[in-house]
Length: 370
Ligand SMILES: Cc1ncc(COP(=O)(O)O)c(C=O)c1O
Image (cartoon, rainbow, N blue to C red):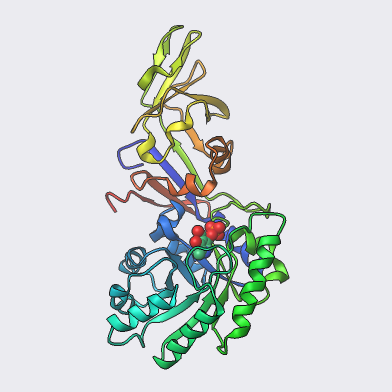
């Protein structure tokens, strides 16, 4: 049952466990599981619950909102907000036992001035080693931040940086970033409980180069994808049923702006899925599958519907594979000239999720109802 609409994703948590095993074995480090953006479209609550059973060391989200959502659903594992936390809301982080990040001296000064005490807040310091996104860029600023932390008796639990190009097989940029990170570490007179550098691709490829860290922050590899072939297994697949089947004559046109015209007698199926479900409007021409047979997307993708050309004999009982064993998120990403991350994080919460554990159906969730 897919909650009244015949469109669903299947989330295979056995595969998630397998991928965590691969990451642990390859990196030989603790896993900080990145479950921001609704666990890359896989549903943060169920994924968090399952990851807790695998005893990951931290759950990583991008905002305090995402962290509070997890805590409201009884997640007890340490949670870190990797993104920016507004200094005026740090009391919420303290109340919910959520770790925050120091991205700059300016942030720390403002946070100290706005809050009576931050003694109960757990913090990780983020240093910018070349990506020029968030983080402390100079050793001078880093030392000032450490000094302020010491003066105010703050609980600095961790130090980290983020790599910009760990997907490159030529590791020149990564090596530079790691050298820079080592300089930050050497300049600090502090024993951090956690030091973390690698995202998915780095955790599967850096080996000894990441020897200064004791944890990896992995997202996409957990969900089954990496630039480096490591035997990962995609966790999410997407399917829908068929609402209606229609025969076209040569010259019949399909969907908005009539961008597809039948050249022969053709059969099309109308599917209960569209761009509001996370499927890109540019998917015209891409193939979905029915019983291993490719079926081309014809005409513009609509908000809630789209059309595919189907073989004669297709029935309303057939299931359409949108993401699955014939064509995974990378295949769709390449067609759309994007990355698997965007395909997965685009999966709309309005699509029902069916979770599987130990090869059996575990739970069906639709965020509108559950
Ligand atoms: C700071 C940080 N660490 C780790 C990750 C996880 O990256 P990946 O999904 O490539 O493992 C992200 C993702 O965007 C991130 O922003």
